[in-house]
Length: 125
Image 1 (cartoon, rainbow, N blue to C red):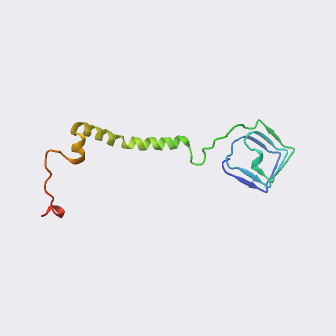
Image 2: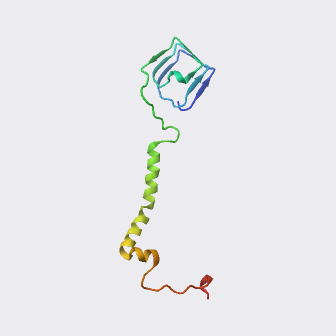
Image 3: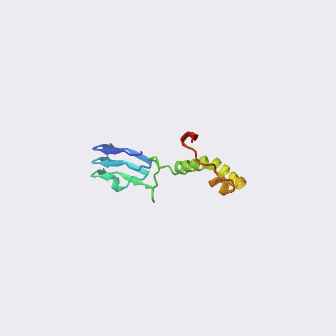
């Protein structure tokens, strides 16, 4: 379950097993003879709900990280890696040109050759 809100629902003789939910809440629900096995459904997720003759076994412990809402850590780093990889050829060419030509020539032209006089717009006088 990802993000589900149950309202005014009745769960009778149900079996919840291996459930990890990030934003699942039960509002005004009733649980009768229900078993929760290996879930992260803790007390704060049951808002104004009644739990009658139900059992919680082997609840999940610790901080449950949730990357289900488009926050997948793998994808974040993968997109960053692809962006870095995209500029790599330009960086290599730039480094080779700087080594071959020199930094001053790349930035402003050859320091010993005078630049031609400025022309008018579109090369005319």
